[in-house]
Structures are given as C-alpha cells and as structure tokens.
Image (cartoon, rainbow, N blue to C red; front, side, top):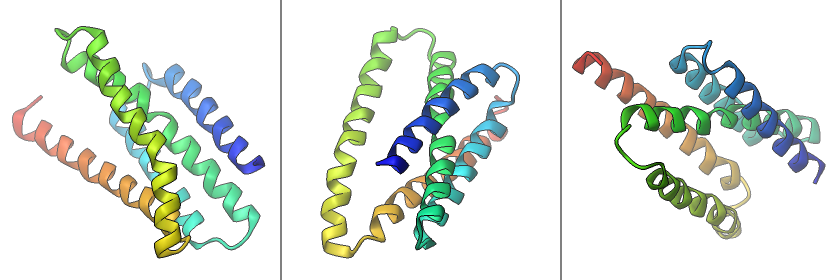
Amino acid sequence: MLILALYWLFLLLGRLISVAILPRVRHGRLLLGSVLAAFFGCLILFFTDNAFGATIGVLFIGGGYASIYPLVAEAIGRRFPYYHPGFFNGIFSVAMVGGLLAPATLGYAAEIFGVGVVIGIPLLGTCMVVALLLLIWLESKVTGR
C-alpha cells in the first residue's frame, strides 16, 4: 500500500510540475522524457525482485505518466479549437473507463499468464506511445506543421 501511495504522490506531484513548466519547455521533449521515464520504470519493475526496485520503478512510472494528460489536453485544444470543451470530456471519460477496467483485466491476465504480464502490458502501452510520438513527428515533418 505504501508503494501504491508513493505512485499516486509522484503522479500528482509530476502533474503539478508538468503544468508549471509546460509553457517553458518544448512539448516534444517533455513528452519524450516522460515516455522514456515510464519505459525505464516499467523495465525496472519487470526485472526487479525486491521492494527497493519496485519502489524506484513505480516512482519512475508515476513521474513519467504525469505529464501525459496536460500535454494531450493542450494539444487537443490547440488542434481542434472549434469543438466544444464538453466533447473532450467525453473522450477523456472513455479513456478513464479503460483506466478503471485495466486493473481487473490485468488481474485476470496474471491469473492465466503469470504475474510478469502485470507490468508487461503497461510496458507495451508505453512502447505504443513512443511509436505514436514518432509517427506524429513524421507527419508534422511531411506536412510542414
């Protein structure tokens, strides 16, 4: 429970820090740093066998995932200014449902495939974010935006 509390603390503090530095930092670098921190934390959790490694991995994941929401909210608002803000609440509500279903899904997957899948799945999700980031950068280079 203490490690879970530390995760939420780092997620909260990371979100506060990322909102504060968002106007001064290039968004691509902040997103890349966040993704790399989360990826590193997932790798630590995947290969650790003690409480210290688990704590450090959780802290990297919490800090890494913290800046995603502020970056996405700002990017959506800038890219689609003609949509009503309530529309975005619906999008984030669907994302929250996925976040609420994830623990149960991971529990069932751990029962079938073993406990390693519990961190393997978020690790794959983080890799997909890196792939999407690279595709967005490629699209911006091709279109000149």
